[in-house]
Image 1 (cartoon, one colour):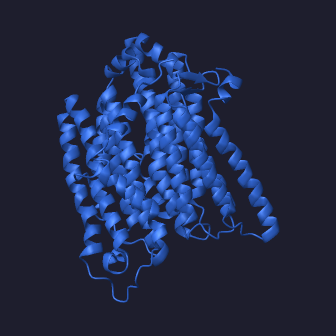
Image 2 (cartoon, helix red, strand yellow; image 1 turned 90 degrees about the vertical axis):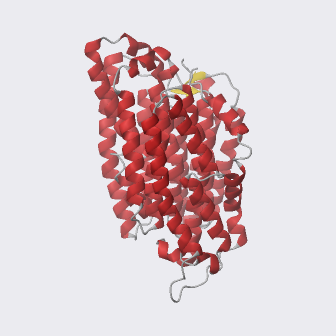
Length: 494
């Protein structure tokens, strides 16, 4: 479709773009009228806009697949699935920001919501990118906004250090990725994925090593976005230094957008001939090594952590490894398992970060010692909710995380990747130790001497209650999610 015809199917992004402009002008007006503190109005506008994107996104379900803006973007069930997931992640991030003491009352609060909405818009573009140029631009758009959001706490040295490290690592990964994309274009003569898919099976044997090197370089950029080893170095410091709502958006939204790009890029339009050509290269072996290294390093590094945000950062790295196991399969079943896993991961990881924010609001601390005796210091409800989320992240039945890992591991078994599945199971057992350590601190350890009672108002737990209920109930009724994932699986071949 040309630009005019594409606009009708581009409504979610247009809503975000309009909201960004509104928040900018409202912030400027309030800054002039009230001084430097904009108040809650920009955040409320951002929340309305984030919720409003979900309606036109849901309206895209069942639409016939199409190329948009002269083959720069693509609309299919895969795109709609990720837009729904990313829209929900943006709604949650804005709601968390409205309740976060790190964000409220800051003089640049209006700019914060502008950047948050801009990051959400860029993630939507990442999910729909079907062209090398658009993939690069959208990923850079997300990265640039994320750098600034990470350093939002300007007078916090930890936040500034995290933003600087994020920028340096991101610049290196971005350079490697664009270099690899230039090789892909040079070898295939195409920028859009459908053209690349048609060209790859026709490459001669002499060109295959160059293609493999190009894919490795491109994977550096994607791996940086999903925080897979060895591109994970930024994640622990950034997750620790950024405001907690930003950390949650990076852990849930940015990671999902990264996986959307990985899955669409390596599917190359879903062409069976292209997947067959990729299997002749050591691509599955490379992805297997990345999956094993990512889940193993993430879990073992988390064992020694004493800060909750840092522990969840390494946990997030490990979960990227589990999801990569589904990517290794390079089949429709593997793709479905990753989509299901990302949906479940959204619920349990977002819930865990929400509890961390509520505890930090009332205690001013993020270390695990602050959780000692939490259940008996007025925090029984948050303690039970966090226990549910952590055990779900570990994959214990009958919680939602068990279902997510079951689907990924089953896809690996069907592909006869028995060693990879066994390593994943062992890593799940290892992860149970550090998750259980936090639960033990909340329920069995004595509070620190002089520890104050925790005061978390009931209405602040509303979203956490919904996420907890989904984590508990999903195992009983998950057929609707399976159907949704199945409908999102076909990647439009063009």
